[in-house]
Length: 364
Image 1 (tube, rainbow, N blue to C red):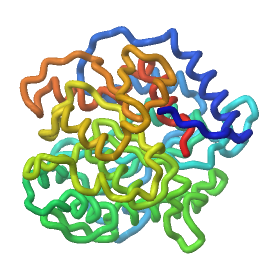
Image 2: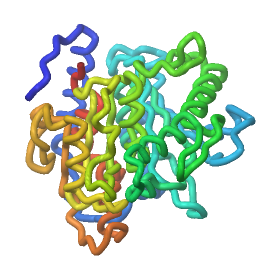
Image 3: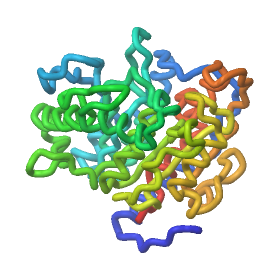
Image 4: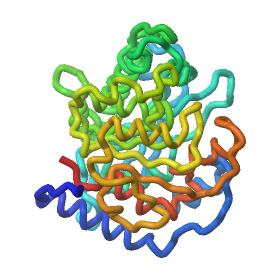
């Protein structure tokens, strides 16, 4: 079922620009078969920068925005095209007045940290008129620890502790370290030090988050947080990659919160996943059950982006088999490669039309 929504003049301009950007990249599909994990190699970053010369990226430590933040103090990253959001140049995309909040996945304790997030995807978002934030948060504990819990609401409690701050069976998070507080303090700080970019527009007058002006996305655990945030708050859109993976092995069914009444219309949810991703102990078949519990199949059957062309029948469930990998276990190199493949900067040319669709498709 396709969504039909009347386009405003502004959304028509956005759609035209996105289509132009798409056509400019359709002939540049990456036909390589390199299946290595995403790299932040400087040569790759330099190549991406050449393709997005007007995007400014910069970082800020969470503790700089709030002295109460003492843990998980790796830098947040921001992306913005000042020619769009400050200069308002007419030959570029219009300022969407929307924040794209990207929430990264689980980062195992004591493993090396650093990097700019999915920088190629973020550059595309900034060139489409988004303000972009890659937010750091308490991310060492995977949500899969809830998979065998006897409490049917274990996944939701775990995630809300991280999103809002609080206690659950598996994790306790101070309010200062929560996703919400970190985002609020970052936006306040950005408005103070970079007022022309107008980061403060994503906060209400009382200092709370203006969720309706925010597109929330994430990879893996971060994609699960994005989905739950959208169920609890009306957001502009949701983009899950390598997610949502909350599947109860105890009850052999998707997490209970997927079936809760959603503050965000289901037509605003998008998921882009790999057919061979078993990471976290959730199979591709179980992930599809999660997406059906979210009722995303109401907008059409899953679409294979390796075969179908933009705009992918306006589906909300997108799948790929690129690259084909050898999976020997849920955390094997093949499964991990599949898990991260949808945002791999080495495949930026291949995915640019998909990313453009996820970021610009008309929503309710």
